[in-house]
Image 1 (tube, rainbow, N blue to C red):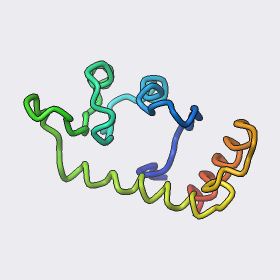
Image 2: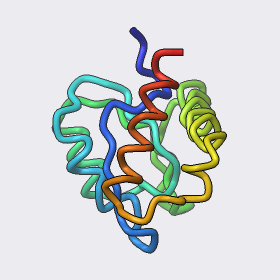
Image 3: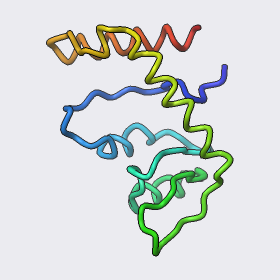
Length: 119
């Protein structure tokens, strides 16, 4: 089954914490793959980690003076991730974050992700 756009691993953090702090852990076992991310993930350490794992980095650079080449055609596939978030946010319980405990919220997100994956 194709995993493009669907989650393979999920990590829950506080709302004020940036996503890139979780990226090295979530991408630890990714090898020989295209890793597509937006400019928020343009970190030298993350790019170097992915290159050591023989991954093709498809992340546009934030700095206009140090442009990194990336495949623009492949980068367009990132919209599938955005579509996934739109699908799970149709579940009002996730969009409004009604769950008080983080474990319960993570459970609801995992359930919604599994439902999206199977449909």
